[in-house]
View 1: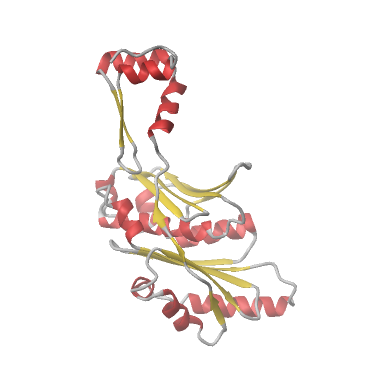
View 2: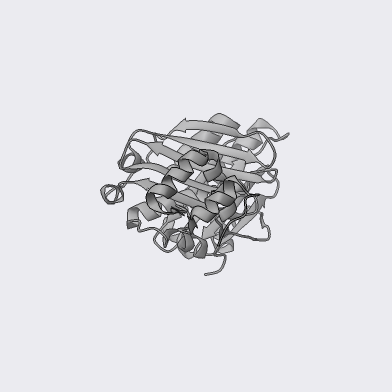
Length: 289
C-alpha cells in the first residue's frame, strides 16, 4: 500500500469544502513499540494520533496541536500532538490491563473531557474543551469543531495494530447560496459516511477518494511526510532539574548517588551525577575529575 506516513489535502471543485486524508504506519509503530499497549488501547491511541495529524493541517501558522483526553476510567490520560511540520508523539497513562477489554470511549476513560490545545510558535496558547460523551473519538471531534470553530466537520478514523488512517472534510465559509452550501455538504458528508474501516486501512489515499467521490471533481494535493519525533534532550531535562532548585536536586543525588530520568515519550534515559549537578548550579566552579 502506498501513502503510508503521509498527510494530503484535497478539495472539491465548485464547492468550499476542503479535506485532509492521513495514514500512519511506521510513525505509528515507532511510538507504540516503546509501550506494551493491549490491542484495544493501541487502536484507540492510533485514532488519537491520526486525528492529531489531521487537525495539524488546519493550522495556518507554525505551531503544535495537542489532543488530550482526561478521565476517571482505567485510562486517565491519552495525549497526542502533531506539529505543523508533521512530527508526532503521544502517550497513554492508566491501568492498561483493566482497559484491555474496552470497546467504546467510556469503557476506557469513564467520565472524561477532551481538550484541543493550539500553541502557535511564539504566540498565545488557545484551548477548547468539550465533554467526551460520544461512543467514539470522531463524534467528539466533530462536536468540538461545531461548537468551537462553528464549521460543519465530519471525521472518519480507523486503526488496527499495524496502522491508523483518517479522513476529515470541512465546510469552509462561503459566498455561495445557503441552498447550494447545504446541498453540497449533505451530499459530500453522506458519501464519506459510507467509508468502511477496512477501506481506510487497506486502500491508498487516491483509491479511497475515488471510491467515495469519483463523480465530484476531487483534487488531491502532494503528500506531506509524517514521522515520530520526540523533543526531549539532555539540555531540556537539565533545565527542568534547575527549576526544582539546588537543594532538592542535591538531596536526590545524596540519597541515590545520581539522578536517572527516562522520557515517557521515547524511553531515552538521561543520567546526572554529582559533577553534572555542580556544573548546573555553579557553572564557573572548576570540576575535579
